[in-house]
Image (cartoon, helix red, strand yellow):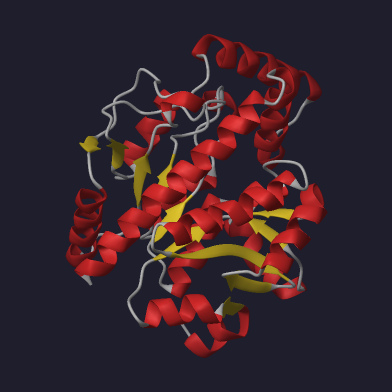
Length: 310
């Protein structure tokens, strides 16, 4: 990699640069949750609160986005507000979109895949998000599989999430991750959480009970030179977990409507999440916000433990 060419595009904030240089803990945060995850101004409030959770737990937040073609690791409050106001008019940026937006000088809100790539370019190892993408229902005929899974197989970043979004085929998502050699951990749980709910009926590869255990495993993987990332699934707090029957009925209804309207590809997840929020009277959005805060807290704790091992 030509570092002088990379510097032309990569813009790491002064705060994040300083923390990395000093070996202090840094947590990457994505930006599609700002533009595509919820309405304004709740999206901006949530993004700023997530950064506060990271700081309160001893780490430096690095919200990642593409602004005016710059690959930014650590964006300002003004830039978060800019993405929040533009909302769905911001391009949802995955791996394939990064060079196009960089060349054209446009804005992009980074998905899990793109956030992992930019975090890795800057040297950030731990990333907190809501839920990862996965294998969509019916993928055996549509081949609709999120690029997030491929990135987990390639890019050395530990992703903390509340499981794969429950709009997906969770069984096939786990099979795909196994094929790609991605370790799936359950934090204080042996079962894969299903985003809005704590249970899915599927087992994770390993249960881990402390942030230190997770940091130790990541460090061992790094020391061994093994490629790819790791997935930490952190169940939504009990008090915010939704009724499985109610949420599954809402998901089925939303998927049926998306199929009827011919909604496909990168438009599918934002459409389904918005539809589910409307069906559930906003309770799914409240759950989504709480699980993101919970993941930011755990990611910060892991980052703090990892920084001690450096």
